Image (cartoon, rainbow, N blue to C red; front, side, top):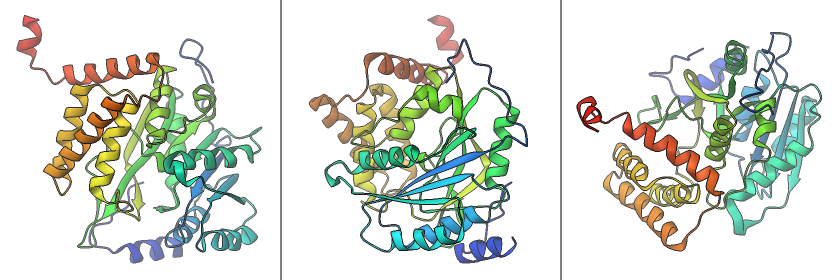
Length: 329
């Protein structure tokens, strides 16, 4: 269900909504999830999220179809994150608060270690879906109900999620320019259980990109990956705001090389940075990160993974080549 958001502030939307209420490709034939079989678990890694995590918890508690269990792992938080989670855990038995001490030398990989700790705390015997959920989001009460219906419609759908919307300076929520139906933001990835098993463990990548890694691994195993624009998710912290936009773009370029991105495709991705201020500087920062990683040979994945990814990317680039040129070659 899509939420009409234009003209409303984040405070109005949150208060109003809350007040109203594996198998490999050749072997793949999972049973469709019936309405009686939509059990899901959530995993959240939270680091110093006192500003937003209560809003996230309240929006999950208000879901029409709630999780069977939600493991919230405080990843070495030093603010009130633990206190807030504990408070809600006393009121809602499905919330399982956990804590681990964070390795600050591996900031982005630390999130994966926290998610793994949460996964180990789950009882998975009757869980059909596993979701990764960031601690700085707001979800419409029908979000998970609508999302799980997408899995029911397509038994080959392995990973799915909604679209990130972020608040502009004028208070209007708009879709992020980088949203695409081919990929799902890591903070809202929902996995079919069989797909999660096929992926095995999410790779703890020092530079980020664990969500992208999971999607590529899923497609390598024959699963479909798709996000749905009609399922709005409000991202309460603008992308890149924690460390700065240019630093974020530089890390994205570094991450892309680490995961095997083709140089031509990276140029195309950098060109899309024109949509985000400060425009040209974003493009240059991303390409600089990619080149630095290339010089230092920071590959984090095996050759078969790189080969699969680059074949996908070149195929997508080829789709933009004019038909007249294709006929000549």
